[in-house]
Structures are given as C-alpha cells and as structure tokens.
Image (cartoon, rainbow, N blue to C red; front, top):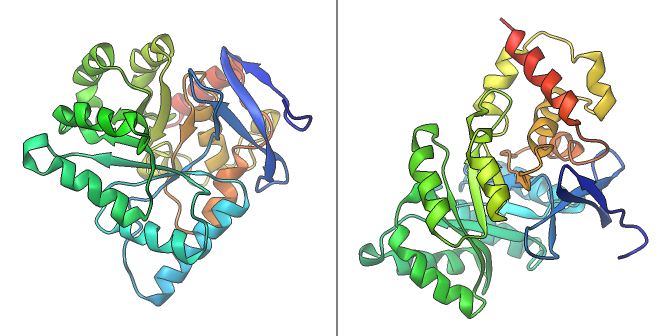
Amino acid sequence: MMNRRELIQWAGGALTFGSQPLGAQGGLLLEKTIPGTTESIPVIGIGTNRYVVGDSSANSQLAQTLQMFHRLGGRLIDTAPMYRSSETVLGNLIDDLELQGQFFLATKSDADRDKGGRERVENSFTQLRTNTIDLMQIHNLRGLDMLPQLRELQAIDRIRYLGITTSRTQQFPDFLQVMQVEKLDFIQVNYSLADRQAAERILPLAQDKGLAVLVNIPLGRGQLFRKVQGRPLPGWAADFGARSWAQFFLKYVISHPAVTCAIPGMRKLSHVEDNLGAATGQLPTSAQRARQESWFDSLI
C-alpha cells in the first residue's frame, strides 16, 4: 500500500483515501473498495441524466463541470441511453477534454434480447467512444434476458462489471428477488435521508452477497433542500465535517457501510465543488447517523 494511502475499516467496509486527487475542500477524496476486488472508487460520482445537447453556452458549462469533476478527483460517471443525448454528450466531452480512460464509465441497458437489446448496448460503446464499459446495468429490471449476452461481453473484457438498477421503491420486492438469484457485481438503488426504505432489506442483502452499491437520488430530487429551506445547518454537523446542506445529506448516504458511491446530478461548477466536499474528511458514525435521522424526522 502506498504511504499516502491510509486504510480505514469503516463498519465492515473498506474506506481509503485516494493517493492522488485533492478534494474540493483540500482533503484527499474518500474511496471505497468494490467488494471482491482490490479496486476502489471515490464515494461521490456524477449522475448525468440531464446532460443533453444544448447551445454553446450550455455545452461549455457541462465541459467545465466535467473538467472540474476530474480535476478534483471524481471518477465514476453514470449515464444511460434512455437519458436522451447523455451518452453522446459525454462521449464528445470526454474526447474534447482529452480525458479518455480517466473515468469509471457506468451506463445501462433496458431492451430485451429480441427487441434490439444487443444493438442498443453496442450503440453505448459507440456513443461513449470507448472499447470498454466499466459497468453495464439492467435499467429498472427491464430486459433481464440480456444478462447472458452481457456476461459474454464481460468474459471478453468489453464490460468489466454487471449490475441492476431501480429508482422506484415499489419495485423493491422484484429487485430483491433478482439480487437473490442472479450473479451480479453492482446494484444501484434510490436512498436518501428522506427515503430510507432501501436500508431495510436491499442494502443488508448487498452486504451479505458482496455487491457494490451505487445510490441514485441521494438528494431526494430537491425534497431534502425544501425541507430545510431557511434553516441553519445544525452546529453538530461540523463533528463530521459537513459544511453545507448538500454535504450533510450526502455524508449520511455514503456513510452507510453498504454504500460504495452516491451519484448526485451535477451540471454546475458550484455543485461539483460542494458535492465532492462530502467525500473529504470524516463521515458520520452510526450514532451520528441516528441523530441525523431523528433530527430530520422531527422537522415539520
């Protein structure tokens, strides 16, 4: 292990400090190890479902955001062909910024085998301008019959990891069933301080089965910010290094021992700097997480 890396055992999960990139607040970005491997990724990634083709000003803003994300040590980018032009935009931006090979690229498949699923997957390689996709996920459990073909691509190293996703709590029973019967590397699920149902069964099962966990909607689609609008950050948030509401909410998510990486959407430089700040310094302990829950639940 490199001297600049300090290994911490956090509630049974491997948490490390990245040896190279500096976070937005001057600290090393926290990373977690992908279960069953020696590979680690920063605990904050970027969701790109709103990365779409726009005018020159909008495109420039996305380029600056992605460049800042990389400069501060961000690596994981989550996209999908169903996010309109997101894959195309990302492929172009990464190429224009000459950052090929610098990111952990995660995308999705949602078409059945007999309905163009393989063509859709091949198109993702083309749009992202890459020969290898780090993580291919079955989106909202649609097109599960593509898993055998995806495993063939994994066997020849075109896909490195396989997973499934959901962002719908009502889909959790089916999601749990697939987790039980399929051999997977990752899952992606909705989880936040305002939406904690995944912690009841899905996150514990992911731990039991050694699955990495990406968290979507970690900021609750604005619900969390609306709940605290006009309120000061609690003084005790400083005990785990939270300097903003976004960091307060994100540190709650990434401190769960099952969670590998949270993927908030980011299209502005200020969002990148703030959100990646949650990946530096301390994370809430189990007692502090319980205090966050009680405090949030007491809000009117």
